[in-house]
Length: 348
Image 1 (tube, rainbow, N blue to C red):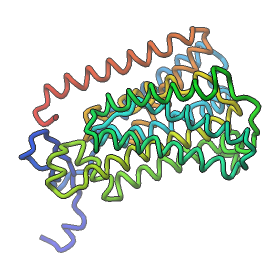
Image 2 (image 1 turned 90 degrees about the vertical axis):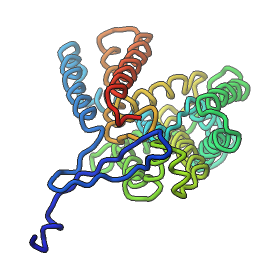
Image 3 (image 1 turned 180 degrees about the horizontal axis):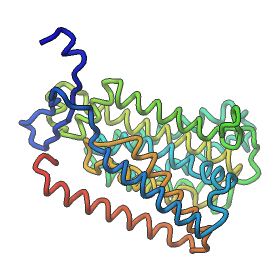
């Protein structure tokens, strides 16, 4: 065998996930094969779905493919894209957070009230980030230290956050906020919308966390088999709390961007964020039971959801159908994943 053979060969890396605590997750290295992704097929299908549905909307409405509409859709989807990146980390870990909309709402209220109190913009933004990360950490503590199942813990948090929102703002909007942060969303950098740069930055950081740091490997390991992860020396509780905190931080950042874009805080803010973020994440190929996930797929899922919402508005369909369609897509994908898991002996 020539000395360079080992350098030139391609390998395929697969992560074997099993709920059996006696089975370890380990790389399966096979010479002569390329590195493949467990979510590549879903990403490809979703990409073509975006092309097909987008073509349909472009024929149905002459305004769909206009630069103005595409830019507005991009900016309107910015907060969802940011939240969905954090949701991907949590679901890969085997968790869930249905309170994320409430975190966005409470953080937005804190930002709005801080503005009204005369706090400068350069302090307001960190306050929003801190609020989101604090609420996210509370969810992490509930699921780890108090052993409350994630769906129950975050569902309870959602009701608490919603109550706080209505108590603080009293059923009225917080309006007339300054536009000092508006360039974050509405500006351009060398003709590139700032929203694009923000998305690239956030997803780039999350990609580094998942693919280049031990933290990401720990997330996948916990999602594959939490007990095996503990036995291998991973601090599972700390990793979970940190991940929920990251999601909270990103929800706080989404709140900053929301206030920057709208310059007010509505009473119904965040009501559909959790559903849309979970739907975008699962549509993109992230397994709802953990262990498998893709940031690229999540971003495609966000684009698909926002495209459907925008297209329905342009062709005159009631916005009430948006939630019906998104919920229906979520059910279809979860059903397909469940059927695939039963047919795949390696699925967990």
